[in-house]
Structure formats: structure tokens, C-alpha cells
Image 1 (cartoon, rainbow, N blue to C red):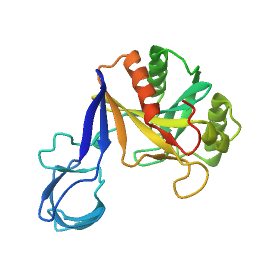
Image 2: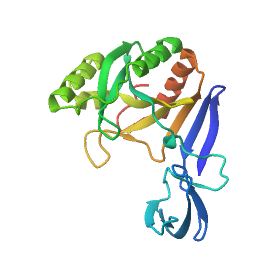
Image 3: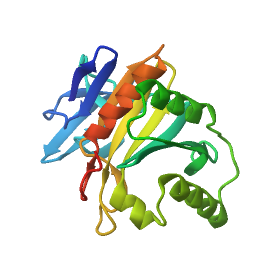
Length: 240
């Protein structure tokens, strides 16, 4: 199930909820269009059978399956990502940077430009920063080495005014930005700190998105990012 609403006139809010299904029900795989049959439901998990006879045990928070006729689907995650960027919110600044991806299934890393804006920057300025970072997105880059990651990390720390990843975690919220054919997406993250199985920046569960339909202005993108930061969570004191 997906909760769908409007954060303001130009922004749509999606929250991925567990599918409420029963054995014998048909679902749709939004990636392939195939219909699958629910064999059993056990707590947070369900077992489904595909047309070729293959069976899979999946979490009911699955992002690729939807109930037939559900108007809240397909999930935003099923859209092809054309470009991506990232944004951090600290008490004294906003940091935005581009990303670079190694091949279709390779790792993604931080990339220039690393932009620093004041926390009270106008939405138009923030949105322009997001667009600049998306424009600088690179794909099919060589697989990054440890040295490449280290260089990118130092650039990020310098832009954020911190000395290490620990200091960045202690001081910031993180949000992923991406662009598909028909919209821009913001995915708020949870800051899990430096210990435990959920340490670091992790997608929130259930996942939430803010979607800005194209064509979109820099003002709309800046306003949506401010709302996305409000949806971010952290084990530390929030910088907002």
C-alpha cells in the first residue's frame, strides 16, 4: 500500500506501506508487468509464485509489487533514474554535490561540484544548486579506487566544514535527489550514527518520497528539499 498526498501545490508525498494481502490474491510486478499469486502470508513476509513457477519469499514492504488497480502504485523506485545528487543540512549550511556512477550496476560516489549554501538560502538558490549538481552527474565512470573515495570524502568534509565522517554524521541530515523522465525525487534518510546495524545514513523504513513533477522550477525544487529535510531523522539533535 502507498500513502499518497500533496505536500504543497507542486509536490507529491509517497510513503511505502506494507502490502495488505491474502493467500490467493494476485499482485502485479511493476517492473515486468507480470501477475504473481500470493501463496502464503506470514507476519511481515509473503510467499509469491511467478508465472514460470518460481517462488519467492518477500517482505510486505516490497517496492516492486502492487495490488491490481491500486492507484497509489507503481512505487517511485520503479522509475529509471537518469541522474542523481545528494544534499546535507547542517546548522550553519546546506551542502549539495553531484554523483558519479560506475556502469549500470556499479557503485555510486560523491562528485564535484561540492556546493555550500547558507542555511537560510532562498528556495530558488537551493533549487538551482540541485539542478547544477544533477547537470554534473556522470555515468559509466571507471570503478572508483580507495584513493578516489578518499579524495571525494575530503571534498565533502571541506564543503561541510567538518574533519571526518563521524563529525559529518553528528552534525547533519542527508537527502538523496534523483531525476527520472517525468519527475524529480527526494528520498529522506535516517542518520543512524556511528554504531549498530543501522549506522550511517540509511533509507527510512517505510520509505518516503517527495516528488516534483516536470516541468519544475528552481523555487519548487528548493521548497521541496526543505520539506524533505524535515522528513529526515537522526539519532543526534536535529540541525533544523
